[in-house]
Image (cartoon, rainbow, N blue to C red; front, side, top):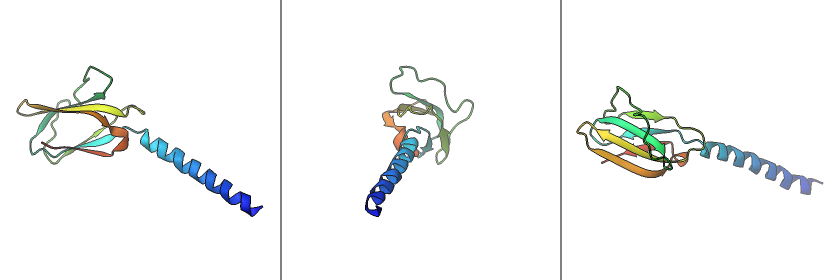
Length: 109
């Protein structure tokens, strides 16, 4: 009887771990780190399927170099485009970023 119970216990454990991993991989939230050496004035993050950037996530604030901003997105919205606008007015974009697979995104120049 023990011979059959061990594989069942292992299967149940792997299903539990697998569901935990899925829950974590379904979370698109991340921390955007400014590693550019320049202050960021605006940050936009939107689904790659959306043509509109949406609102500036900094609002009236700025993101100095070396600082971070927590980005919260709807669960399951894993493929996103990220756009930043620097104090000079220049902008930089990263497209099709799988934010469910990361915890930090370093913006560099």
